[in-house]
Amino acid sequence: MTRSIQKYNIYILILISSYGVAEIKDNKTEKLLKTLYDNEGWVIDIRKEGISLSRKPIEDMGLMALMVRQTIMIPKEIIQSVIMDVNNYEKFLNNKGLISKVVNRSNNWVDGYQYIPIDIPLIGDREYLFRMHPSGFDKEDTISIIHWYLMDKQQDILVAMNERPKDTVYLDHGAGLWVAEEIGKDTIVLSYRIYMDPGGSLPDLLINMMNKISVVNIFKDAISEAQYRYNLSIQ
Image 1 (spheres, rainbow, N blue to C red):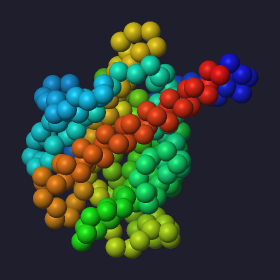
Image 2: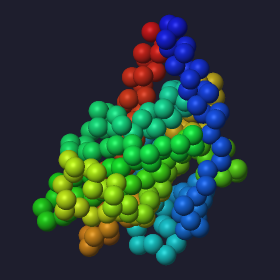
Image 3: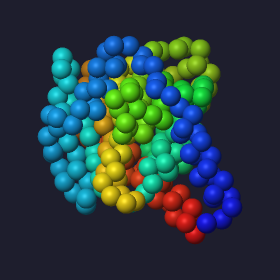
Image 4: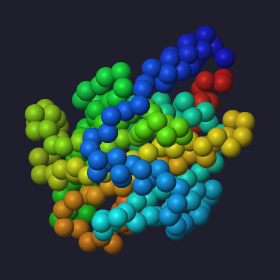
């Protein structure tokens, strides 16, 4: 391992240890994160190429939460660093037209902006602000390496995103967890659990279908980038 890679790994460990338990946006968001975290109630829809996709009903919501899951041999710290690398999402997430920017940060969280193009006629593009923490969402959550939730609309930040199209639908209800469960030496079961309401007047059936495709693609792209960074670290 080279000296530069050693410094990188030490930096990541220091970074992780500096984060405390996060404050949650509101009770509704906390309840949603607890539901995503709970392993009960998930029903597997698809198993393919070592990846499983599961769904779970959310109380008082018409849409399903989704979980994509795979056993991998990549250090969870590298997975975590990939997901926190918001400014580089456009480089490794295969979503043409995606805009992803860090708009604020502290020692405990990163605030990001995302614009998501929707390649369906007569359907408006989506945008949102989110807050992401490299930690569990409460003291009982010892296995989540990332949790995030959507933030309320802040017009001043949106106006500053000059390159974004103006006709977009703003999303403000959603949350997600990246969970890494250690099952052996150098082996983890990684899962991405998400509930996202894309707004507008889309039928629930179409929304659930779009969400399934999106969550699997994000998961695969993140693992691919993490594998690339891990391979570099051991050369």
